[in-house]
Image (cartoon, rainbow, N blue to C red; front, top):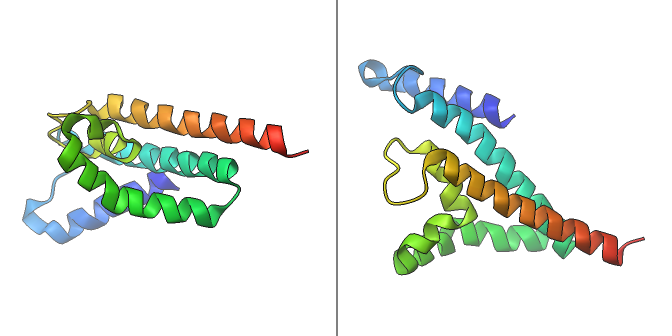
Length: 132
């Protein structure tokens, strides 16, 4: 679904740009469309792992939404380079044409994948330890 949504929004956005529109052949356009779908899947897996860990989807939403929308940017302004390795910021590198100043586009997705894998592993351990 993430891949379908990313390509659909790309083409819809290009339709509104008129003569300023770009095609998938432009440098970074295809990578951004493919990467956006992968990024969405990884963030969903990250949230699922945290949900298993905390046993509450409401708690995870209460943590992730402010973290992704507010805290990540505040920490990014204060911490500088270290914030580029937070799960949301690292994965978003694949969407940018100019990726200087942080991990590269595919490296950023790999960092987000590590965060997702860590959350899933922690959630799996928590479920295995406390549930029948």
